[in-house]
Length: 221
Image 1 (tube, one colour):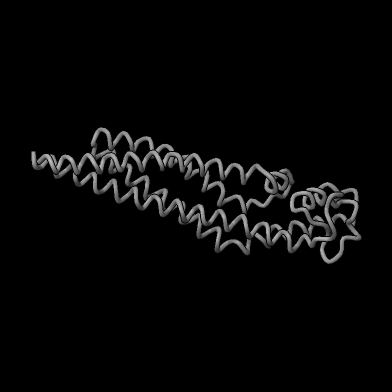
Image 2 (spheres, rainbow, N blue to C red):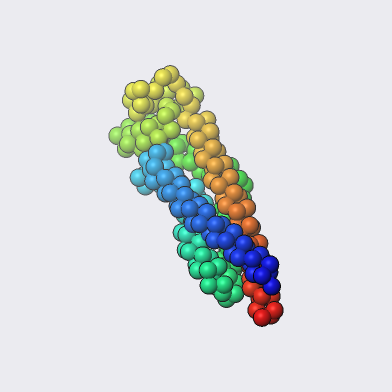
C-alpha cells in the first residue's frame, strides 16, 4: 500500500512539473505569436489596406492555443494537487483540443505556405502596377513593402527607385525576397505548432496514468 501511494505521489509530481512547463510554454507561444503578428515585417504589412490575412490565420490559432495552454496548465496543477479525477479528465480533454489546434497550425503552415507566398506576392504586384500608373497613389504601399522586406523592384529597380530604402546595398528582387521571408516564417510557425503538439502528448499520458492511479488507490481503500 505504501509503495502504491509512493508511486501515485511520484506521478502527481511529474504532472505538476509538466504543468509548470506547459504554462511557461503557453506564455512563450503567446509572446512568439504576438511578436510575429505585430513586430517587424508583419507589423508593416498589417498597416496596409490589404494585409495578408491568410498568413495571420495560423498566428491567431497559435496565440489562442497559447492562452488555452496557460489556463489548462493552471487547472492541471489543481487537478493533480487535489487528486480529482473530474478535473484531470477535463484537463485531458483540453489537451486534446490543444493538440488538434497545434497540429492544424503546423499542417496549415507547411501545406499553405505556397498559397500565402502567392498572396503576398500578388499584393506586391498590384502595388507595383499602381505605382507605375499613378506614382502618387502607390508610393506609400511600395515604400512599406520595400522597407519591410528590404528589397527593391522586380527584375530591375530603376522604375521604383524613389521608393527603395536608401541603406539597401544593391538590387534585391522583391518577388524572390517575399518568398524567402514568408517561407522561413511559416516554417518556424509550423515547427512551433508541431513541437507543442508533441508536448501535449506527454501531458495526456501523465494525466491518464494519474487518473487511473487515483481510481485504483480508492478501490484499494
